[in-house]
Length: 223
Image (tube, rainbow, N blue to C red; front, side, top):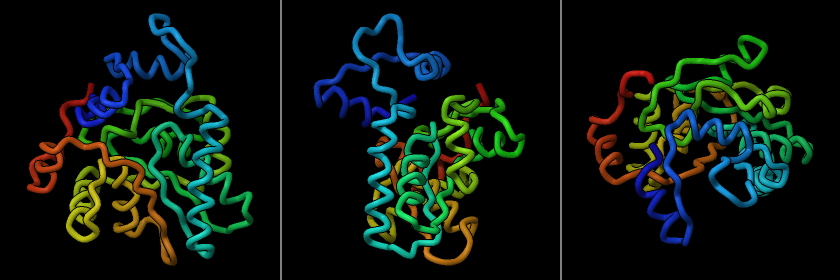
């Protein structure tokens, strides 16, 4: 269910996409590869170099706002949020780094509550860049250690955040990227200086138009 705008960009840059059902795609991430796709697999979440690269975002944030109180990051697999959290802690900052999830698919919040990775209901929605039924087991130890918690936003709050970013900041954000803004606007990050990492703008024009007019919010029935 990747947006057409993302698929078009991949192909425009010379890449090739292989479409899979969501569960088979997740299995590919868990198994670090697909038997029918040759080549070297670069894990998008748990590869140490990918995590380190994500950490540079944390360094840039502290460069501009060294006294940040909280940094809110979308949580898909944990590589982005954990990378930022590691860099922030290594810099000696006291800023807390929170994972941000959407209520229709929030396995990290559920796992924190249970004290171990658990499976949760998953419903596809316009927030298509984050969310799954469960966590990547290899990321759980790092995520529970480095992240201050999970802030869960409703689909309605995320849609409102998408609208706010467009109307007030002239920023087009996909649902996943707007989730930290939704959590911040709801006051879940607490007081002080709050930074939201708006991590992506891959959203189809028709879907964005639906959100701006209030017609794209509710997810389809859970798979």
